[in-house]
Length: 208
Image (cartoon, rainbow, N blue to C red):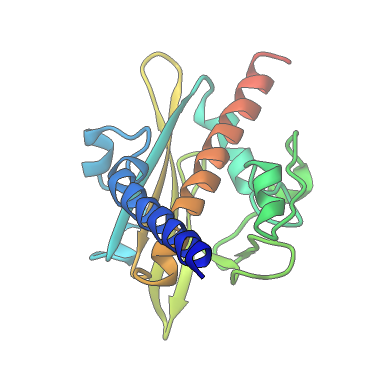
């Protein structure tokens, strides 16, 4: 019995440490790669969820033009280009994807109202494309009772040196409980997505 109680105590202590670590790391995760100006900036789609319960900005610099990056974003989704993230992690969470390593012409006709599936099994529910600004932004999200409650905003900002900032902004009303539990996993996936797009776009630009 004493051994069991000791083991239980260790598990509880580890769980508490994990919670503390997540709390301490959340501010860093929620602005990974993004600077103050990008966080304060207004982007397409902001007006759809004007007062989000959670506001997250993540970003990466890509040595390519918006026109060279945009096609990779257009073909996001299960059954198409995938999410360009970590294949092992995607499989671990029950979302095995085939992540494209080239641009497919047959997946380049994305339209407002189209569904973008995250996983082959249909869970979570597909995102719905809300706005498209060619070579500048793609906004997708979820609605409840006709109101947008969750947004994924992909924004391309060209830089003076020829590079592009890819901003991934999330505005959502989905917080607490389950959503807080999966928050670190979402960070891992989104970081992988941004770096995956960067690697693919730069590889094509450099002719590799």
